[in-house]
Length: 254
Image 1 (cartoon, one colour):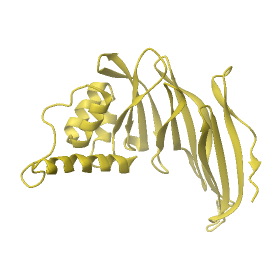
Image 2 (cartoon, helix red, strand yellow):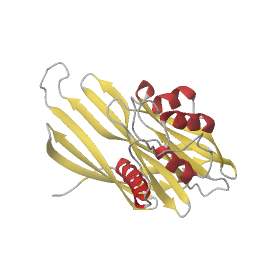
Image 3 (cartoon, helix red, strand yellow):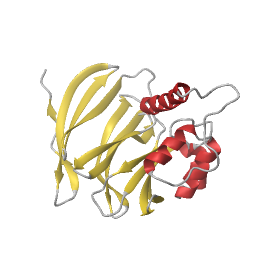
Image 4 (tube, one colour):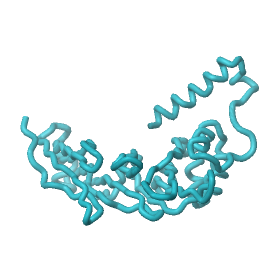
């Protein structure tokens, strides 16, 4: 995702060069004034060329907490901020603002709801702990016109020789992000937390969306970097519970 954003920025600068417009030296590619609250794609594009003060101003006007917005736009946390459409198969239109790991070792996903033509404001958010690594997210298509937000590597626990991350799927209902799948996607622990050099056992899961409402999870267990076994299970959508439910793990034969 970050690579695509950098590529977009490079193509933007290249377009100036092709037009014979200077982009370096005393000239500066950017925008003047504030970033208008507009189409989601337009705001996302503006974030690529805006300065930190302009980014901060936009986030606060969208309704994001000032302290969180300031941390996300600080030079200390120079990762991407992204805004993208989110289809919820409902009358209202939605979008997602993703903020990098910043204040109090947390990253954030903010849900935007359209308040009028090209007018947006935040209606919900989730905080993602990132002591281990920065969580990643992607949009899943559950059905035509319906997305879900799939978060991986959100930290949930550490200490005493153990480190755990989880994966979560959120769907959008009535302006709220609802958790419909949650499972550990990374676990690292030593056999004896009191002994330095004790063997480290890791369990790492990867996920593949087989169809709109079927997700395959493959879990690899290794010790000191050497794979020991592979297991697999299937997550299927259960309409009555409005959530994904998993089958038991079964061994993957070599």
